[in-house]
Image (cartoon, rainbow over all chains, first blue to last red; front, top):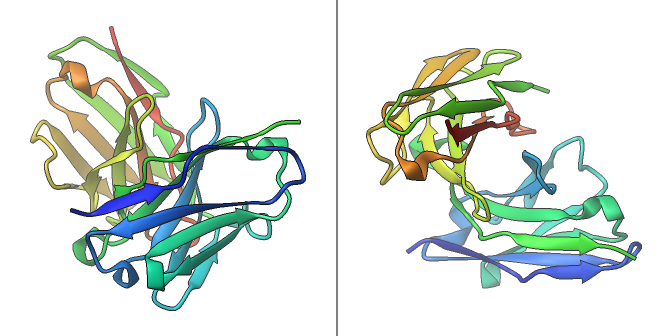
Amino acid sequence: EVQLVQSGAEVKKPGESLRISCKGSGYSFTSYWISWVRQMPGKGLEWMGRIDPSDSYTNYSPSFQGHVTISADKSISTAYLQWSSLKASDTAMYYCARQGGGSYGGAFDYWGQGTLVTVSS
Amino acid sequence: EIVMTQSPATLSVSPGERATLSCRASQSVSSNLAWYQQKPGQAPRLLIYGASTRATGIPARFSGSGSGTEFTLTISSLQSEDFAVYYCQQYNNWPPGTFGGGTKVEIK
């Protein structure tokens, strides 16, 4: 069974750093891109960026480039999303999602359960 | 960057009725379009990919159509479990893989 399991909720202060994780199982982790998607409270979905776990090549949305870093450790089938200096506006639910291969093209066929990040002083 | 526009923002439908949701792209995305369903407190779920192919386990009452810039998601007979928010997403031009703003389907 394919699963993406994300790390737990985080409460941080502005200026702090953070790394959240997404562990894949039940499939070949290096065969599918992993994307990160933000959902601010009461709002829609925003694609942030993606990584090819086989070589750690990344793409970012212009809206998030330079504000977050996406990485992966293929030895433990885990992708990461990190911030060096959080802002209150980073408060949101963050999802990882697998980009389906083959006929799925770029559609996200599996999603993690989400990680809620709260940034407050 | 391709902009995806969904309409209406909210759709009020009675159970058993048909729901038609629209998604428009600012430029052609061919058939590289997906639809997702999101219920409160849950992660999104893939319904349709390739504009018209149902994902595994998705009931036949969900259907997608369109290509280029105009797309439609139709729910033929709404069930109670279908009241949710629906998002379209283009994956023809990366980055970014843009989502539409969503359509909330609520009980009339």
